[in-house]
Length: 251
Image (cartoon, rainbow, N blue to C red):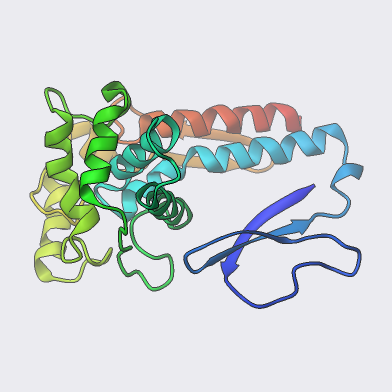
């Protein structure tokens, strides 16, 4: 079995004495590494299945991390991914290749800011290219608000991607940001681009962002207190699905 991980690029040898090649893709300042997990093949089918379900449960909640790292991260990722999968133009052009590198950085860092330095990524592809690429794909796959056109989506999101001064840091760096966050948790709406903004019902304010979770390790069971108004209910339901499979298999 191979386990993929990532570290900053280095000049280490690419192979072990046994001939195993552990270097993988490299982009920007990231070098992907591959590791052998000795003994995985010797685990029982049940043990291997448990590992699979646990990994799926973890991945199911990743969108929450993207969203918490920045108000526009999920929408930006969806725009990039749609062009990456559906664009029928010149995929060998410099703009497309730079967009792919940018997307990989977004994937790796769970957002548009560096995972260590927290500086905002520079988009080295042109706005004109990205706008035309977005207009060439199926609009139903894009994160359009109700009644919003692709051009209007671009006008809203492009400053976040291409303007270095907009959301330059993922941190709450001013007293205005701090006050906005307090308002968000109190009345459920703000007008600050550094904080996720969604209207919340009274029930949602009560439960805020996350469900209440109780884990009873002796019975290997999860009890989730949820409401249909939870901000992350779809993500949480996917996590619950895999957690339930995990619990069932472990019996």
